[in-house]
Image 1: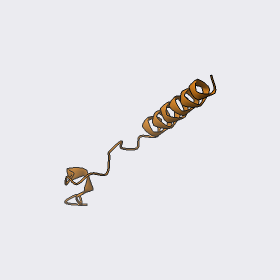
Image 2 (image 1 turned 90 degrees about the vertical axis):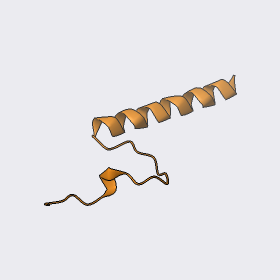
Image 3 (image 1 turned 120 degrees about the horizontal axis):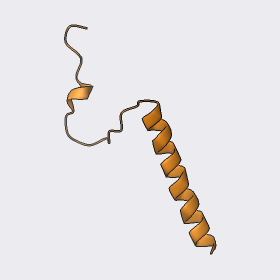
Image 4 (image 1 turned 30 degrees about the vertical axis):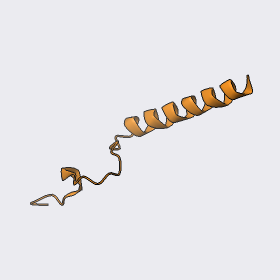
Length: 45
C-alpha cells in the first residue's frame, strides 16, 4: 500500500514538472553525445 502511494506520488510529480516545463516553453532535450543544431550559435545575430 505504501509503495503504491510513493510510486504514484512520484509519477504525479514527474508529470507536473513536465507540464510546467512545456507550458513555459523550455526545450525538452536530453544531454547526450550528439551535436544538436540548437546548441550552435545563430548566424546573423
